[in-house]
Image (cartoon, rainbow, N blue to C red; front, side, top):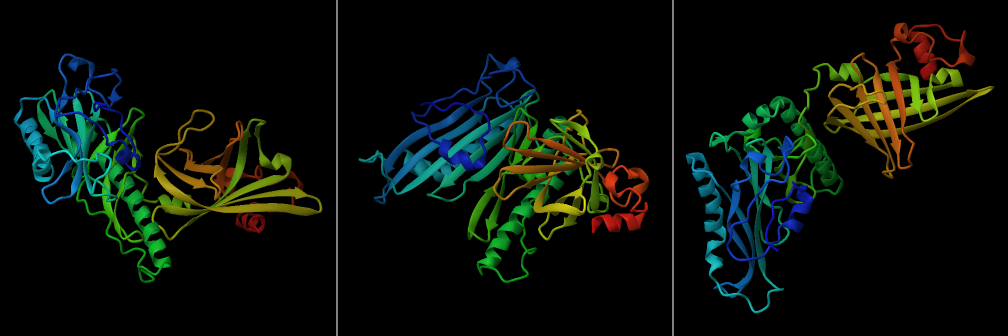
Length: 420
């Protein structure tokens, strides 16, 4: 099976797809469509392959030291006469020369299904117009996480681009992407260190001591992007709980926006639902003698929020209540409501312990909080619109169940009484 260019695969699956076979040959990365964001070259380059393979090698060899080595090698070549392309090609060639060349001419092993070590190299290309983000993965040994190297190149000008330059051409905000990336990787690292502390691998109180943002700029990180408007960065870090290096591959919307500086002051509070929208229709909870509250608090792990969702039903002479608390992960990306209106460029994902239900929370431009509750069953999605419980001038009495009208006074005292 000859190597074919394919759409970007998440890092956890990449190792399983590194295999190919055949002798040294050129494999064309020809275009398949003409969409703006794609992982194949643009239509204007149909006549000439933009990327070929300078090395394609698949065999198990008998090394001089007596061991057997599996070689699974696919390394690309930029088909351009520019000086930048020649330099990139030379850098890729050195990967072969340093780690593969000494084995390439060794005799094939007697048993091709058994080997002592494996050397795997593969590549992927993500396209934007005439620009490409080329990522090469290198894996040595058995279970070690692969290394990733990346280059961005503009075939029209023949110039190498930085990651920042390519993202800007795509209309993205590199600063906002880096903010979201750091928050994601920091959260992964702290959760990892939390596990290590629980196992006694790290001393208590070392949760925040991980050095995860080792990169100075995004230009140091390989990246790929897909046709749905997302970008994936590859970050290598040391896992405290696994005691080995791992690769994180956070996927972030290209249209990510930076969080407002006063985000915590805006969001971390108690909220009361004023509108509920489901398959049954749209209604105010108060009309059904119900109330829904949402309490958001800052959690210890970076980029997480503790979310408590409570429902109360006022059935004389008692109040029936239920509440659930989840951990929400802060992500970049807007949420589109049932009416097509988009939220601000962030969201909280709060997955239930069994993974069967999810709350997605974000803030609308009018300052209300929108929550989408989804389950596995079709038609189970429910939307909630919340207002801060302290904003009684905005809420009025619309959020207070009809049975309780006249028992509360508007203002802070009413909010405290209701919360209790």
